[in-house]
Amino acid sequence: NAGVTQTPKFQVLKTGQSMTLQCAQDMNHEYMSWYRQDPGMGLRLIHYSVGAGITDQGEVPNGYNVSRSTTEDFPLRLLSAAPSQTSVYFCASRRGIRQPTEAFFGQGTRLTVV
Amino acid sequence: GENVEQHPSTLSVQEGDSAVIKCTYSDSASNYFPWYKQELGKGPQLIIDIRSNVGEKKDQRIAVTLNKTAKHFSLHITETQPEDSAVYFCAATSGSARQLTFGSGTQLTVLP
Image 1 (cartoon, rainbow over the protein chains, first blue to last red):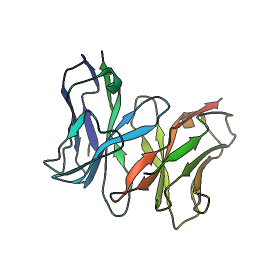
Image 2: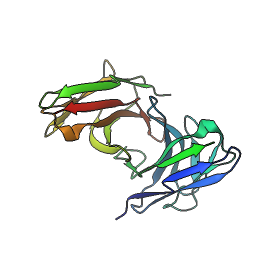
Image 3: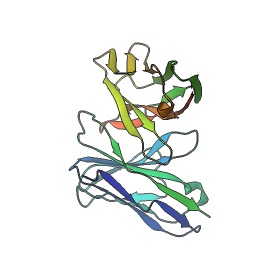
């Protein structure tokens, strides 16, 4: 049981480049989400999904796109990378929607935009 | 939306002493309050959680208290050990999909 798997672990991008951060979970969880973690700011919600085909914006969605074509996968796309997107990105999943339960996090992707 | 404030941002204690981290939240509809521990280079991991119908919950050396009237909740770690050194985050749920809003984190250092 792998839990939540994120790839890559590290990435360096040039300003203006695009890329996709991958996230997969094998726990059949309905709810998946993406957070970014910056020093002194905790984890801020970028986008989330309550099931396949359904996505919604979080607190800081600008510059990011998501899709949820399957229950297992929830990729995060950076359309045109900017230095302000330098951060550590975490994907998380949890079982339920109506009754909150434990969220399981991936190991993170450290992204640097130069 | 929900706003979660966490204090202190850094906390140093001697091994064996207790540590207390406090959080306040703004949305009176929030009903789930988890605490996460994040070790260096890893993702956050749940250590304890509490729901709004409970005032206190304990798991060995870790306890959480919730005061719904005052909208604050606290993490208590007793008999601290060096392996307790990590960043701790509080969180609260809000919104129709019960999204998690996190506090800014507390760096706990347990000095041997």
